Length: 464
Ligand SMILES: Cc1cc2nc3c(=O)[nH]c(=O)nc-3n(C[C@H](O)[C@H](O)[C@H](O)COP(=O)(O)OP(=O)(O)OC[C@H]3O[C@@H](n4cnc5c(N)ncnc54)[C@H](O)[C@@H]3O)c2cc1C
Image (cartoon, rainbow, N blue to C red; front, side, top):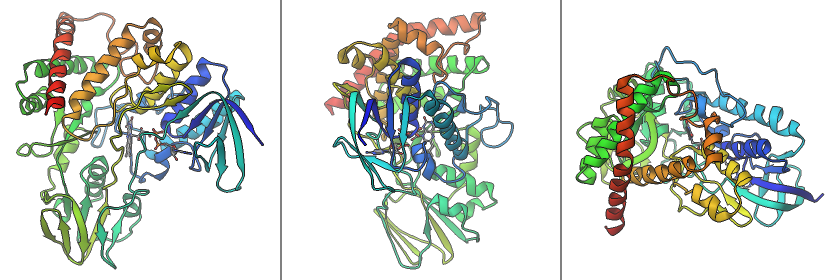
């Protein structure tokens, strides 16, 4: 049967759900969502059981529904900071958004286990049915940035016969002890697996961590919501601007950002070259530093019996070793493309590493702004970062977008009430102390000098 719809959303992951939720609130449009998976939530359906958000739940998800209870953790690595939803909470949340908000609106249809192949048809995998779809307004592509998790990616290294190389999902159910655990990959998944193994009582010496590149991490303490963390946020923003303005070179910039409290690294003697927006707390970092067997010999090529063959050398392993593949790229860097292009919207981040906030904002701008040029002016895409220098361009484009939003009255007002915006109303004290006034003034004074310094760093990057 042919389907008529105002909007066709490709993907029912976090971005598709945030987009649909906002569009549903802001317009009377009919919406059809199509997703290959069995349930909404995208990659969260394939994540390892001990996964958690890397950011407070209080500003993740869709605008119309709270996630979590907005409490502060009193134990564990995130102690003292706002709660991070678990994978199962995130999956349950998106199912509820679909069942209790989107479908009851009577304007949303959801096709699970189905695929859109850009040929005007929805292919339903299980029934084999094919539906022609006629889109009256726009097609919204949320699959452009294409994240990968260990459970679904293809390994780039060879594994010899009879060697136990597992995904983090399989590790959680492995049911026997190993003499050694080799963690392949130093991104957020690798960090999560190391912390989880240590929490299970595995000794730091039993862990071998393959780290092709060291990465800069964000201190999670610096982007906490509510008035309670206002002083920390304000001081950090000022420190960061001052670090940027005073930096004399790329190297110097990253040293200063570390001193300013913006970035953290595992080993103070090694300068990271990667940056992927991973967050840690200082407490988690101290735990990770107990792991001393860190193999910095480049990418893994092959696991054979008792040996790891890496790009720059060989590392011997014990007989009873479990290898854990954490090498999926997460969210790869893709070339930015205009968000609004005639009858197509390509959803990308418009604030650094904030996909649900970005999707919701793009939907709001779609619903309220007139033409593509105006819309794109408010939505410069920010590709996910991979390298240290991406920190600079992310900061610059994010700042440009923020400025454009503040100059647009409708967007500014919408953001004040949007639960996905960490800077929403109610996050700052109504009466400020003189110290807070002084810091706020410094923040204003350093805003444009920071911008021009970032711009000059970007010009240098283009030139080299
Ligand atoms: C361990 C981990 C922790 C994370 N923590 C955070 C965090 O704290 N905060 C944060 O903001 N982000 C976090 N992220 C990033 C996370 O990727 C995003 O938050 C978000 O889930 C991405 O959602 P998405 O919809 O953009 O992509 P996906 O989750 O990849 O969803 C896209 C969906 O589109 C479907 N699809 C694509 N093309 C088609 C097609 N042609 N036809 C049908 N279906 C299609 C796919 O099947 C998929 O279900 C984390 C990621 C990981 C791996």
